[in-house]
Length: 271
Image (cartoon, rainbow, N blue to C red; front, side, top):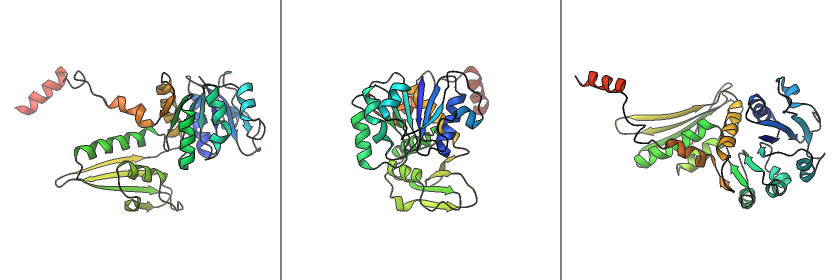
């Protein structure tokens, strides 16, 4: 599948590296605001060997209109790591062509979400403020545990590098999903911590901690590949990561059956 990438900052470059190393997709181009790297090869710039199907050239929004870009360099999937206004550039043209849109913009204004929902009437659209598999698994797991024990004490703790001034956007998303006030989020700022998010469930006689730690921005690229694979057969509509992950939480009766070795282990402890 042919992929176009909006945004080529630190996160966009990390995502591009993951896409280039995958044999399931080909990176056709990357769009950025600055003309500094215009017409450079993404694989060459990142120092990644790539096959001939990955032209991966860098263009600017000023060089082409969205219509010209998509006519000249057609794609199947558009991945957006650019800015709040990115969808205004490509949205209508991509939707008219039936291009799947995957937006990972962390803080959209309400009108931009409405715009994505309108585009979803014509094509497959997915939005995730944090598209890493780990964070989304963490949120779903926490929601399940809260449903099981709704009166448990819940605390959200986020840790980041010392110079990060604001409360983590991901922590705010977690709080929203668990119906907790943003003001209750505990923040820690120290050294060069990339990002740690922890949800603590305080039971009377036990404690459960769900924790996610970011190691590198390439995790966003893994999330994009997961989304691409799981959106492949979807009909037009508006999706999020929870829609794609929830089917994997289903455990069939067959899955819960103990194997012979497990049964033997249980008999050992029952003696």
